[in-house]
Length: 71
Image (tube, rainbow, N blue to C red; front, top):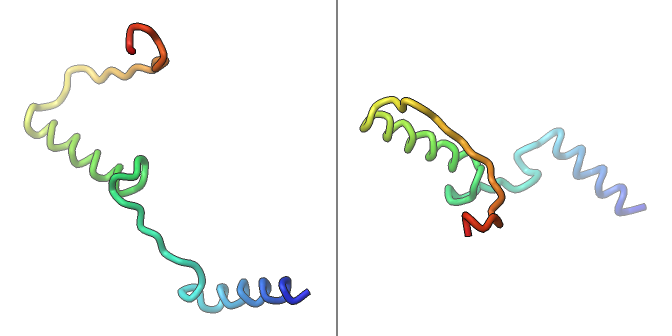
């Protein structure tokens, strides 16, 4: 019962004072897919376009990493 009461207290405190609940974690830029990583990739792509101009074609490919031709 005390566990449930404590949980309710924490939730209600979070609704009143959100800054005191939880912990902010900033992922490093090296973590794939995080906001900072995506922003850095975008800036890198824009720098390449600025240096070499717009690409004529943009090709993507999906493949199996275990194909003989790749390994």
